[in-house]
Length: 121
Image (cartoon, rainbow, N blue to C red):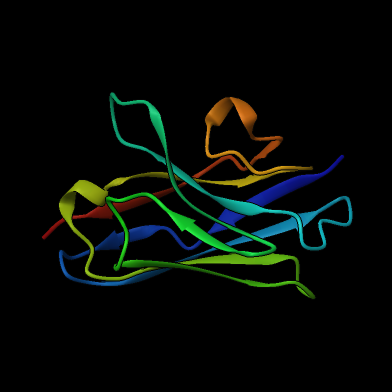
């Protein structure tokens, strides 16, 4: 059964940086799109960014601060988060698609269990 597992969450001060990792296993993800969503307390899960064969897409809230990269050989996707703000506090979920990547929660094929990022002084 294919699955993805996140790691790297934690507590960071405003203005700080954190890098999340997501490892895929159970199938050959190859160059399939992978990405990240987040869910703040009491709110819906929202798109953060994704990486696909032709590039990267980001939510407006994180453009210029967050960067997605991948190591295909390791089946790993990274989310580098810089200039973190308290409003970035959320559980971050790794997402993977079998086919066309659509930045909607109901179009994701595989989810991780999430990793908590807390931005606070």
